[in-house]
Every structure is written in structure tokens, then in C-alpha cells.
Image (tube, rainbow, N blue to C red; front, side):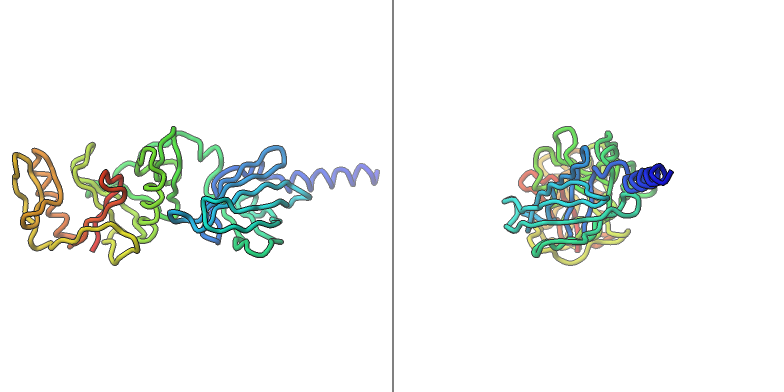
Length: 283
């Protein structure tokens, strides 16, 4: 009888320890990195990297579940600048939504992980976010944005939706994500969809302000901007220099100029020129 009771208690404890079912998915850590975990038959693997291009560090991990904890070995790979390696032990908390390091070798800075999405969520088809009311804007949560490869194309995503498509340019996608996080942008706005001739970003409904290291920006004087027709194409110009081209659509050019004046933008910034995959305005 004691043996049966002990077996039942052990089985209950084992089920409780594995109630999360699967740790596979995308995670964030307090070391600033994004972690991509795979759990398979009690084995845990991950690839992780710090934000930035190139990342300060990139690491892989291989471990296994031992008495409800994860024990394994990590090593930095040459995508990043760091070259460390060592051992790591973690415990699973919050029904598989949190991980916490209880033992770690020197050089490993992360200690707490939070699940961003599960494998099923991350691999599900992504739809584009729909615009919000008022201006033609798409609202998103910058804390949930990430870079994800979807059907062979690199995209900035917000949970189950995608925001920006960078084709095969992963570096541009990550750079644009750095910009979004730096300015805490939470709205992407457009003039002239479905093929917008003019795009701008807002931060908490306001204007991205200040400078970011490594930006590719062109300054302009808002007060000197006008709409002019040059060689049959409507453009927003500053003196002899044109900034935005609207083709044969005069109304879109004038709507865009009104937006620039409303928010007092004076910098046009780009990621990935000469073929900019991502652009934004700030002051």
C-alpha cells in the first residue's frame, strides 16, 4: 500500500512538473536577448541573440530535463562578438511561462526568461494588422514586436500579425526593430494605401523625437516645404530638392504635407537605402 501511494505521489509530482506540456517558442530574457527554444523528448535547445546589428552576443544551448529542472551547456557562436561558454541550470515557473536560472557559469548574464509565444502561435499564418480609426494607422504593441521569418521572408511581427516585410534582408528588419524600440513607436500610418506613397510612424500617438546612433536621416525645414509638379509628377519639395514623390496624385501629396506640418516633422529617416525597406519621420 505504501509503495502504491508513493508511486501515485511521484506520478502526480511528475505531471505537475510538466504541466506546461512544451517550452517550444519565442522567449525574452532580462539580458536583452530573444531566445528561440525547442523542446523535444525531454531535450531543450535554443538559439539566442542580443538586439542590434551585429548583435553583441549570440549563443546556442543544449540541455535536458532533470528532476523538473533544465541542465545543459551554452556556448557563444561567431554571429556575435562574445566568445564565452559554460554550464547552466534553470527551473520552470508559472506553468511554463517563466524560466529562472538557479546555477550559471560566469559570463552568462541572463537569469529570467518570459515566454513571448508558443510554437503553435509562432508558426501560425500571419495576417496584416488592420488600420485604426481616424488617420490610416495601424496600432501595435512595441513590447511584443519581433523579427520573424515567414514563408522565407523576414518580417517585423506583433504576435499573430505582421507589420513590415523586408524580403530576404534580415539585417534591415532587425535595424528597423531597433528603431521601433528606441522611439517606442506604436503606430504605423500611411497615405495612399494599398500602395502607400507616404509612411510615417507615431510613438504613443505623438512624434518620435531625438536622435538614435547610426540613423540615416535627411533634415529639412518644415516651413519651406511645398507641393510642386515636376516633370509631370507631384512632389513635396524643399527649395530645389524633392523629398517625397506621389506620381500623378496631387491630393495625396497635399495630405502628406498637412501631416508633416501637423506633427512638425523635420527629419526623414531610412533603413536599407537606396531601396529603403523602412522609413520614418521624426523631429
